[in-house]
Amino acid sequence: MRQIFKFAAVVGLTASLILCGDTTNKTTQNPKPAASTKTANKLEPPKVTFIELGSVNCVPCKMMQPIMKEIEKEYAGQVRVIFYDVWTEAGRPYAQQYRIRVIPTQVFLDAQGKEYFRHEGYFPKEELVKVLQQEGVK
Image (tube, rainbow, N blue to C red):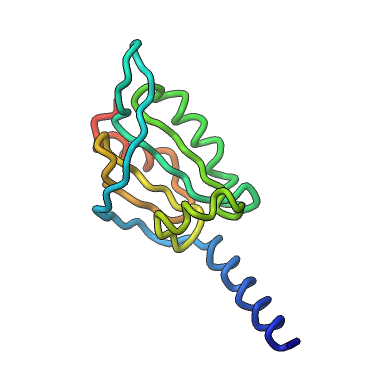
């Protein structure tokens, strides 16, 4: 019985280390519904939904928090920013839904809710803005 617990602990630790890793960009075409935001007194979908999947306890994820706030403020009405803490019970289903491998992972959805870009690891603001501009965000 102790060997089972030791094995589970090793697997859990390994998964935690992998989840805080950093890898390269990759694009996919995976449709996901985008939610609407209220702008100009009518419901319009944002040009981009920027989803950050991470944890409040992960160092690279913490580094993304100020960038997410800046994007939300600077591109209000054009970009919807969503954060899911995938290390919580409430956020765990989103890790499965978006099939993340590491945290942080950024998923970008177009106005129709289709994924057009994905990045894993810390994402500098300058590079992130270029991804937003691909969908007409100004």
